[in-house]
Image 1 (cartoon, rainbow, N blue to C red):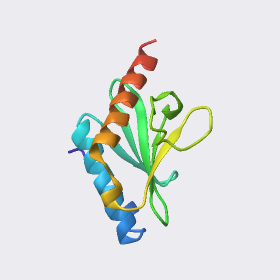
Image 2 (spheres, rainbow, N blue to C red):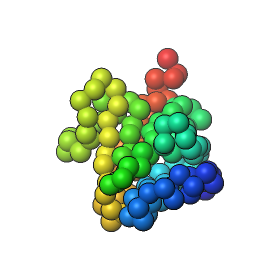
Image 3 (cartoon, helix red, strand yellow):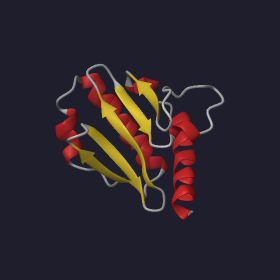
Image 4 (cartoon, one colour):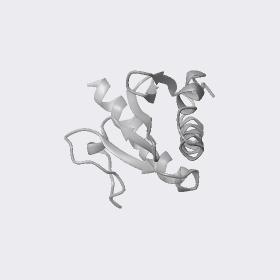
Length: 124
């Protein structure tokens, strides 16, 4: 997996549960789409994921209490169970407070749609 070594330093600033949740999400994202490039953005305090065809797809934002998985074009993603949080014009978020909350099927499905959408938008 193309892990960014700086992610460990970023996550070391957070409680163990937050770091473990972020590590779980990182593994799920990169297992589902191994072509994703992981890059820490210190200024944003995030771990970002870029697809070669889709561009920037999503990012993990660790906080004091959990991890937000933010999808760049989340407002356009199918969400029949209304799991995504947010009301802005573009981004949507999945929020996690514990590694056990991370369902690879749910995260993987949103990621599949996000990569497909991003690739389509960039192909225009």
